[in-house]
Image (tube, rainbow, N blue to C red; front, side, top):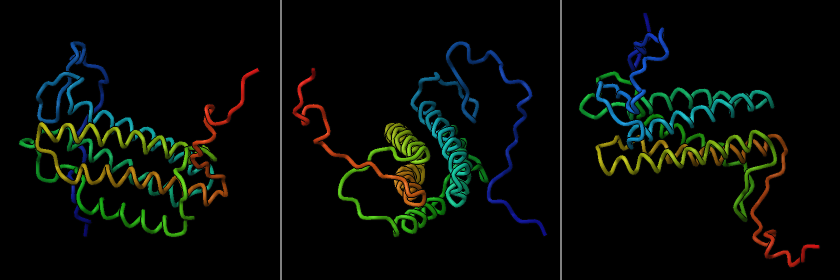
Length: 209
């Protein structure tokens, strides 16, 4: 007995990569509507696509340093981000039954992972800075791009109906990247730089020679 799939399988044929249809600065949504490439909806799912590329880099670095649990999570996140992009690339009136999307299940899964992986981390007494290991930096890059995607979706939601789960997911995901960055440093025994305002040039009270 075959397992029933929640979402439809992709129906794409990418035999020809360029079409010249975008040369005038427009692109097509899933429903066929043409929009300027700098439209808010295009900017939103384009930034989600950018985030996915950063997640791919973080996944490879996690594999390289032996953080198999984290790399497995990040591989799942890449598929979820593509599902999220699919729904953002579709106007509400064109959304089909079975179309890939983000649901409350994905949001809850992130919350469970945040709670579990944060449980063993040292309590913070200051804000952390990216650094200490390459994977930590990659995950903080993911966090900041995720926040930018979230801001763009917030702006889109002011103009058009947007699924609540999309915003919930991006908000939770950026928190997850923060926890995963700290978790990775903990597992690797890497130093965790913290913000010290007195390390600024104006606070060091030294005169240049």
